[in-house]
Structure formats: C-alpha cells, structure tokens
Length: 528
Image 1 (tube, rainbow, N blue to C red):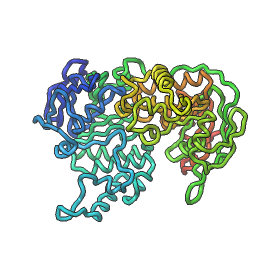
Image 2: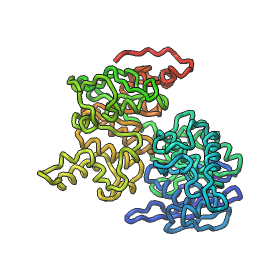
Image 3: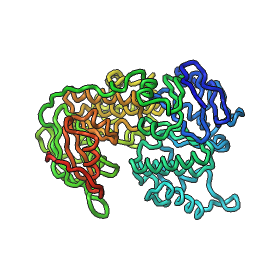
Image 4: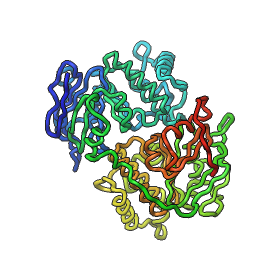
C-alpha cells in the first residue's frame, strides 16, 4: 500500500483493511487553546506507527483521546472500521488499547507487582486477589524485559530507568491490540532500549499495532514503519518511514534545517570558577558510586559529562548540589574552600541544580507555574514577615520572557504545560537563585528537537554571561554539539577528558566502556 504525503488541511488516505484504528477529524479545544484542529491519524495493524511533533503540537492530547483520558470536542474514532466511543481508560482497555505514559503513572509506595496489576488484578473465584499468581506473572514479564528487578521491590526505591521498565511491564500485562508508547525510552540505557525493541518486534509479529512517540530521531528511524507529523495542533504529513530521512522529519516538525539546532559558540573562558578534588561517594554494600573524582570548571564554560547508565554521573551532580552530604572530597568556589554541605547552603553559595526527573524532583505538580518558579528563592522576596507579591510577579514575568516560556497565565497549574515548557520552569527556578554554576542532569530528556534547541540557546546565553554550566546527556550529538570540554565517566571514575576539538563519538564511547569488560581504544586522560 502506498501512502502519500498529507499536507495541512488535507485528509490522509482512506481507511483500508490494514488500518486497525483511525482517528477522523479530531478537534480538541481547551479554554483559550485549540490543542488539535481537524486531525486525522491512521494506526496500521502490526506496524510501528511513529508520531512526532514539537512539544505542544498535540501528540499527547491525541493519545489521551485514543486512550480514554480525554474526550474529543469533535471527530470520531473507528476501530476495525466501526465507530467506537471511548469515555475512560477502562473503556479503552476493553477495546484492546493500552498506553505507556511519558510521565510515569506509578504508585511509588506500592510494590512492582501491585503496580503492574493495578485495576486488573488476578483474582481467585473472582473475589480475592491471587497474590502468588500475580507475583509469578510479574516475574515472567520482567524476565521478558531482562531486568534485575524483584517483583516485591517498592517502586519508589527504584531508579527512574527501572521504573520505566515497570511501566512497560504494566502495559504488556494487558491483552492489547494497540499499544501507545509515549517516550518509552526517555530513561532507559542503550541495552534496555535494545531489549524493548526486541519486545516491540515480537508484538508486531503477533499483529499488535504500536503507536510510538519519541524525540530520539535515531530510534524513530530504526523502529518505525509509518510516520505522522503534527505541528501546532494540525496534521502536517503522513508517510511510510522508508520514504523519508532525518532532515525531512525535522523540517516538517520545526520548519527549519536540523543543522541550525546547535549554535556555533565562540566563547572565551574566565578564571577558574569551580575546583573539585577527590570527590568520593561510597556505595551501600561496598565500592564507590563516585570514585575519587577531580574536575575543574571556568566562568563561561559549558562542561559536558557523558557515560553509560550507572556510570555515576547523576550521583556526582548530587554531590556537587549538596544532595549527598555523606560524600567526601574538597571543593573550591571562586578560589574559596566550600564547607557547606546542605542543598540550601549550596544554593546560597551560587550552585543551582536541574534534576533528571523534573516531575518527581523538580516540580510540585499541584502548584502553579509561578509558585514552582519561586520555590527555591522565596527568601529573596521577604519584606518584613511578608512576601513581596509585586517583586515575585516582576521576576516571574522577566524569566518567562527571557526563556520564551509558552504560558497563558503564570497562575495556571504546572501540569497544563508541555514537557519542554515544564523543563524551562525548572531552569527558571534555578536561575531565580542568581547562581554562579548551573548543574543540569539530562536537561533535554523527553522534549522535542525544537525545545532542545531553545534549551541549548539558554545554556549558551548563560555561559556568555559568565555562568559555569555542567550538563549530563546520554545523547552523543548533544554533548559533542554543546560542550566546550567533555568528561567521560565509567564505574564512578573519570575515564576520559576531551576538548571540543578532540572529541569524537568513537573516543567518547570507547572511554565510557572502560571497566565494563569491553575492548576499548586507548584514551589519554588529562588530570584536572
């Protein structure tokens, strides 16, 4: 079957026997916003149906309509050619539609097994929960995903990558015909992604249709069969993946050439801003999460940190931010020794931290955009015993403008924003503390290429103003494109250090594999 390009306002090809689900002329209106405007979307049986678009393009809204979380203002859904009404998640499940959400939808105080079978428990005689059968089935699902997770583990104790695996196992536990995956690999390591792709191919062979949303373009090209592009709530194009390339995807999404995503930086560094020597964090049970690390950072420098999952990158950031007071080592800031160990004391000294998991560690979900932005700097707005609302509002409006934050009202709830704009709020919260150093752990996780470009622009502007930026990324192209200098970590140690001119993908991957039993290239390590 040939599927031709579909431009804005035009309808995709008519439904055929291959189309298991078709969304027709879907419109969704929120107060003050048209999230989806007359959108058509085909889901092909036994195929990976990729959907892309910038944050705010309407992807997640359309998926929520298909999954029963939201209802369309106008339009209809056809399942196997027949109109259906989906009014709830349970309705969607009865129609064989499951979803893995971008933001994890788990109960952190419950076990892995309890999360996997929440709302569809296995019961004895239809009454009592069969806990033994549930644990056995959970173990089978986790084994299928080849992860060292105990079904009895409490989900809140798991790292975010393993929580993502639990979310995937939860979806696989259902008898589904269509599985929606919204950023399923955003927190997974390369080996975990490989296993997930094997599971996806297995599901395809069984006739399951996969709807796959991701901002990782290399994944889309590898796993996708069909691609649909949304822009500003409208259908932009639909094509077989075999007919397009990466440049086509990015230009359809954002309307510009992908070569413009990384600005060319000509930066002159200032004096040494940060010096770290012998930073050490012990692992429970023996060994080190951070193993006697030394590094330096200059005013105006962007320092990238690359490494595999579990290399100790995030733990190093947490040590620098004051989240690990048990860590040892020596730290100097602008030549002065740092004695402060708490997060508040580090913030007061000028260290701001942007965590990897913005939902759990960076934002308070029930609070407004403005309140989230002000959380770390409230003391600055005290006037006697009261907060100066005028001063708060002035600074919030300033950061909204400086970061090009797309928000109708600073008082709207944070969860109403797209992932990219939520990330900007976390950055704004850090900037309102007037930092000297910005620590950014995976700052582009789960956001689209357009929002990534904006985050990179912000990093570049801050460095040009003299801030020191340390950022972690699992994306080689991001580290190579943005960092002035790159440190590579493996097994808690610095295993490579490269200038911008010296760094290559091969050198970084080689250094990241040291200590993993993999034959690597010789990597020269220059001591900090």
